[in-house]
Length: 633
Image (cartoon, rainbow, N blue to C red):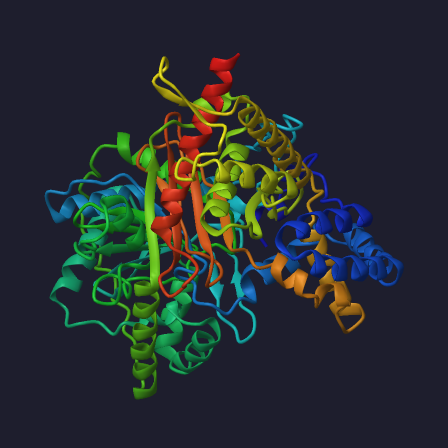
């Protein structure tokens, strides 16, 4: 296990995750369901919920209460399997987020190696700090301020790898060294689809300097440039997880391949040195940067120059595009952003790595031994990935009308404000609301990951329905008058007041849901626990979990998360999680909000540009709503 598990100090006062009250979860579940299913279907679900409470519900609740006593965290293992490890979809687009760093200008190849060396040097510093158990304990900054937070996720970034398995993947975690100053570390450098193992720390000679790392990187870059085209083995990690598990088994039959796979699994991270190119003519610079971070822009460009199983893949292109792709299962965005922004900040102030006094032996290029069958599998993986890439409809959109400071001036939490803007935008576009996912950090609890802040609730629907009816492109209602003196359309004061009241009620509800989640009272993990307890102890699922409402409640057609960054020019995005859904991450800045909106071109229901426009109109209309309140006051 990781250092955090060994070092009890990390868990000083970090509580165990509670099991929510059963009746409260069922009542809340029905409340959310009322927004997304028909009244007739809801009636069926109410009956099933009643029977569940009278029959197996209390028994399953008792199993969870016992599990809460016996385990460090009663839900995380189930949650991890359900959210990631049992999901068979390919990692790029469907699971792994991309993160964009500020664009660079490189005059020559040495400068690419300089930056990569500085990043690696900082990651080594970070890993040594973790190994010594010196990571400072973080504390909550709101809602029970000062509460200590679990630091476990920070130990699950470097040296971690997701291993494919048929039916279920596993996470391979590094063992904390007994002597952090006297241990081995390596990084893998990917260049022109070749992989190079660079031992950055060894027991016999200590740690490489930034200059020595830079020289090793240059060796790899020059070697790859002179080599014949590489076998595109990295594409195997972009496959359906069962297919990759089977291919990996075939690959492992050869001893050389087995050794390569071991090096990739153990490495601190993968550093992908890309050549220029791969930008789409129909996309702006920000969108192109995110596409390249997420999937490498296709097999004709950089997609084979990746190892998607690795938690941290740093990406540096000779044309100045810089970023990261991260495998999501070990940790949430907050830990990854912290790691990345630290490396960025330190590289910004560091001088050029000093040239080493003597050159070390060149890093070995990993050679693969492939059968004709494996070569065919790689070709199929290439075709599948290119089709998935062409189906992704993604847009990075910076809304510049206002940002979090204006939202705060409206006496509303920026997170609740943006969530309600997305409900308004969805309703305006589609005429109804859908199950919405927003990750809620459970770091107040030991080994806590996330629960789900649902934003589609009756209060949100009441507000969105009225607001969307009164949108700028809707026909005017009979009581809208033109006041020539003010030279503007005045709106029905009563309706404007009603809209504000409904918004404020929805925002209060949203904040309550958020608070319930981060304090361990969310419903999604609880329902998951009840379902899995039934599967394991009863051998069947109660009708509440086979009901059409439950299927619809778990189909997140709007998958969202706030990923805040402090460095200008950095943001993170990901794909939609269902075929007819949207993915929408948001990064609220002082005077703007960066949205990364995604959907699939093959869907006849969704359209990224239409959602972007609807979101822009929603945010504009909300500002007008608050300005009217201020002027009427």
